[in-house]
Length: 338
Ligand SMILES: NC(=O)c1ccc[n+]([C@@H]2O[C@H](COP(=O)([O-])OP(=O)(O)OC[C@H]3O[C@@H](n4cnc5c(N)ncnc54)[C@H](OP(=O)(O)O)[C@@H]3O)[C@@H](O)[C@H]2O)c1
Image (tube, rainbow, N blue to C red; front, top):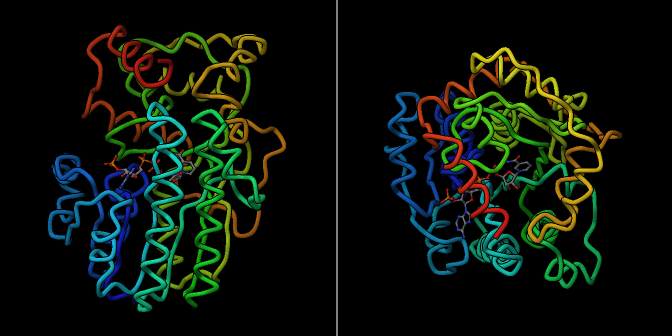
């Protein structure tokens, strides 16, 4: 790799951790500086032998909205990977906009002002890929459900980086993955949490549709290839070739967890209530699209779905989150319903 000092934001997140591991495993890795909020999360990750090198990295403990700290984190930096994004739907749309758009602006402005950074890789999303923000997008995002706001804020942050790259003359890659699966997730979303639930009991029911999944390690490799200059500059979508029926996925999760049960498909109409839930709105519809797209370079998948399921469950087994189903339900309700 050629970048001498690389700043990684969101370093203790699911993808951030996988990116850090990928970088540190490459020959002649750059000096890696991690921007993170919580040293304890880093210590948890670094307790894994394959992640121990994280403790040798430079660290800046900061909120992405903290301008002076972000400026300081960028000193001497040649390349940036921006994997920070708030999925804290329970904090509401305003918070998501402040972190995802405000934070992106803080970082992008500092990059332009300092004038040293040569390359930025921005982690986009399948749900935001290729869509331009309209002028009233910010207002629409403020008024939307938190889940919808997360996708809208991604689009807005993308625009911030596109404008900054035009002004600052740095190389910009936007890597837009579909739904992530794989190990190294400390703080799971509702989907990641199912890998913990299935260790307690089989998944008996499943939504009737499919979902587009990619392994977090495949995405990490593609992102690092961009920063290493091993890909042509641009925007790329990283999605699997086809949606995985959730019925097949849940059955594979059950099998891997030691339960022979095949889940029962729930009727479509049950999912019609999701848009009326406060935090979900038009929940995750892109990931469930049947006419999903795979464009540009697509994903050179190294991990099969079976390997991804196996390794996600192995990771969850090492860090069990719930002792019984009640704990899972309380966790779910506190985060997503109230
Ligand atoms: N997960 C998916 O299925 C998926 C799909 C498509 C695209 N993506 C994109 O991939 C990127 C990484 O996602 P992920 O799944 O790795 O999410 P994640 O696990 O929630 O990680 C997000 C990271 O952002 C950090 N962060 C949040 N708010 C912050 C703040 N105010 N200041 C500083 N750091 C903050 C978090 O810090 P803490 O570690 O302290 O919480 C965490 O490290 C995001 O841009 C996301 O939109 C994800």
